[in-house]
Length: 184
Image (cartoon, one colour):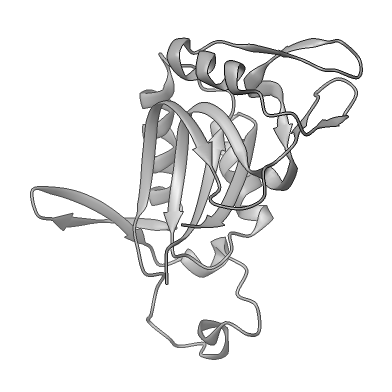
């Protein structure tokens, strides 16, 4: 079966700011009614709030879209992930890195740059087409497969997040965001 995972990655929060920006983002999600805190074991989990439907795209084939009064909510919690992370959408074909300068897709796998970024928090990647050297987090990936960042908001087993919602979250943070989706 697996888990359908969507992560909204904050591309601009630094390592030092990630916890504070994560709290700000979680507070926005809660204040807007997209999530709600629920006591669980020795802590708190964040489940869908009263306005969760406004955050998602309930397509016609989704059984939840056909029942207006349904109290059912997405099946899992929302987590704020902080710390240096290689965010990954899930298994699939190897992605190509897309140069932030010339937009050329490079299928060569940048092992050394990924390892360096994960180890040190900094790495540059040179584009084979335009020779521009750019920080690894500035590169995009085919199918939005990767993001290199210090903050992410993970929604497990929610219907597809609506682009208006993810844009609003980015606007609330004042940062660029990238949405990664996949099944793990």
